[in-house]
Every structure is written in structure tokens, then in C-alpha cells.
Image (cartoon, rainbow, N blue to C red; front, side, top):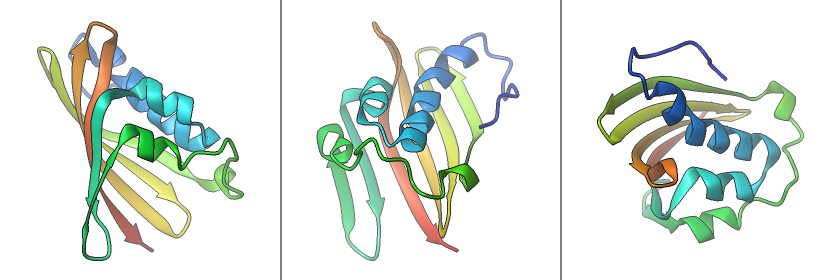
Length: 127
């Protein structure tokens, strides 16, 4: 996980919080980290093998069973870019997960509970 600053914005550390929870959720296979990272109304969308896939957070969280991947020690997750303006932000995150590299694009909003992921669009690239 990258920790170097990507912007000079004073909110960068706060914007990173849900992104780091998201990455930790993957590392630990933990739905609670994901729920903490996302707004309850968030959608996660992709086009995988043809059709549009569109999930709500509850459906997405069913995938996590608190059993980290066998190859977790070799996986990497990087925050590639951040753009923050007022109470809105976008981020690009790359997840190197064994045979598949995921590129995630996030829209984040500053809510009363802090920064949260409002939506995610992603692409899965087999290696």
C-alpha cells in the first residue's frame, strides 16, 4: 500500500481512510471493513466477460468470509491517484491479486461520518 502523498490537499489523509479500509477488507477478507469504507447506497459496477455487473454493498459484502487468500502475502494494493475538490474526490487503486489485476475507480464524498466511497467502477485484467 502506498503512503506517499499524492496531492497537496489538506483532506488527503482523510480521503485515504476509506480507501485503506477497502484495501484492508481485501487483505483480511473482511466485510466489516468494506461496510465502513462504503456509503450504504454505494454501487459497484463492472463489465466482466460481456454483461454489466452492478452490485449493492450488501451483495458485495456477501463475498467476504474472513478467510484471507492463500497467496495474500504476495498481493499488492496501490493508491495510484487522488483528485479532491471540496466534498468530492476520485481515486484510482490497483490491486495485484495473483492471476488478476484489478483497476478500481472510486467516487468519494465527505459525509457527516467522514469520507466514504460513494461508487466504484472496476476492470479485471487476467495476467
